[in-house]
Image 1 (tube, protein in one colour):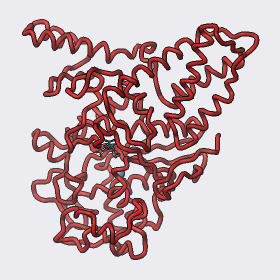
Image 2 (cartoon, rainbow, N blue to C red; image 1 turned 60 degrees about the vertical axis):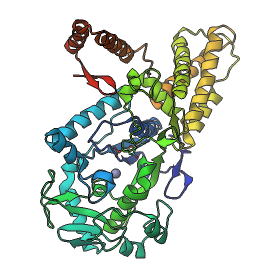
Image 3 (spheres, protein in one colour; image 1 turned 135 degrees about the horizontal axis):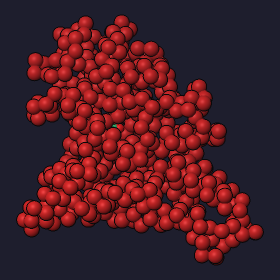
Image 4 (tube, protein in one colour; image 1 turned 180 degrees about the vertical axis):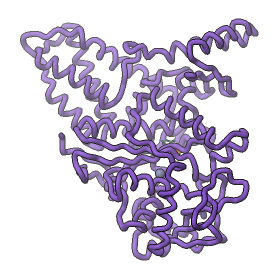
Length: 486
Ligand code: AMP
Ligand code: ZN
């Protein structure tokens, strides 16, 4: 196991050598999606980043227990303590059970994760499956004196907590600054302090998802689920806690406060945060209306897109930026990634045809070391990709008989490509693996749409029914046609 892995820790604001608490075991918790709508491309960026971390730690020999939750209750609109539960609201509008909404978007989320070759976590707990644990946690925080009850709701007392702890430890902001510059999260008439947040929310009569508790029939606050579930599956103190940087100021700050208040320990040693996927410099977000779905990017069916791109091209595009840098989406950047990915995979395909010579003009060991150095430097995937292009250049030169390589170095070159392209970066050769299905489907969908727009409904229906028979369903939306597996 390589020991010289360095990870940037948001908590200490520096790169630190990674030391597992109980090596070779590693506990990693990543905040999962709120399943009230489809995961957009920005969400996918965060999960691809943690997939790389999961894959690399596993490659190094760590036995990683990776917990990524599903938020299927408790996340209120606008991240406030007063709005409506996002899933309940959607269920009411669609006249469905909230769990039908949660199920639909959980299945959709899993499909997208699979298409992007993101490995499933070891445990994927649901907030609704852990209400008892959340109630127990509220009881403990109340007993320790860091929370108070008002009319059936329970709030965390931030100012009291901050008198003996540093509430802003993760964001690096002090309480006075936060008090002046933070908007209230609602429920203000009941709260003692502006920054106090709900641990338990008494349900208004129209709320669909609610549970009995010692305080009221209600629902847990959003931040509580991750404190309760991380502790249940990884213990009071584990190795890595992650999510997007937008979770730092509130969700993760409050999670730390809850865990500290309950058991006197910060939950994780290393806090890892991925930066945002942006569009024209603005964070991609459902609420800003600039988000689009992975399937739209695969099919090109969105007015912002010039054309569609394969899932592995999308994955490669994401990996070309370091996870702590913003990544701005553009058609030009996607086209450049498509070319780069093809170049890399074309040389990968030539590997099997390379012939070893009796002598060598290249030495692969140092290139191999540089690949490890890139990943050991806070999972630096863009630097790793630059090294892989060097490997690709070597492969092409050997193939063109412009460079000699001996059997030992050739074997090492094959190993290097297998380890870093397939295992660590999780890229697949879509053509070789028959994974060009998305392109084929997009082509068929476009044919159907052409038939439809020239009012040839017989052909358009024939294509739709034919696809249904082989297991694919088409859905027409305002933005275009999406396909999914039945
Ligand atoms: P949500 O389903 O909105 O709770 O978000 C799920 C995850 O996606 C969280 O870790 C967010 O931080 C992350 N996320 C949301 N928007 C973006 C974005 N534009 N780029 C990268 N990650 C994002
Ligand atoms: Zn969380």
